[in-house]
Image (cartoon, rainbow, N blue to C red; front, side):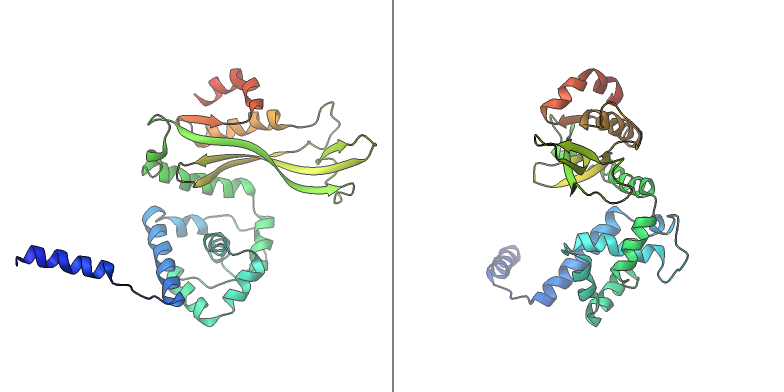
Length: 263
């Protein structure tokens, strides 16, 4: 029997052999795979997080520790900040987290306070920087339409429904709707631009609030007006990106506007 045939048989035997991996070991493998991907595609992640402006006065945790915890919450698909805090109370989790990122695990209430104070434009710049990095590395190229165009889905979605009692200071900006019986309700909506892939994955690009400016108006803000603002920001972040829009029928009325804006 040749050495090559022997090797092939050994490979087939190992592939057919069932390996029982504990949940703990499986969790470790997943964490290290996440770290490997972050180091591969985002080598400047730590530097970028540290360079964000810091609006806090009381500095218990570093800016990098707080923002990285927010990213980890979504990476690990925790359902709430409370669930993340419960997990972080486990000593083994904290040790593994430090081994991965060389960062302490902060309390998620501190993360929430930071994100409320931070400039949303700065966080958007950070996100778009990393998306551009993935595009430059041709990560999404196999999902392009006709081998050239990236699918960008654009649609509005409701985020808040305050009924007839919006929070103080929100009412001038919230969208109002009057029912047939004269009852007024207030909602908060956002327009999202998302990169969609044929494997079911989607990557948020840019968001634009559909909101009034707080002054008197003849017509409320709407998806059509919000799209014009969103298109300008898409052009700013991705000036040469060939895109194919996936939209509702309302965008057809903007065809004259879209062509010069996104070419």
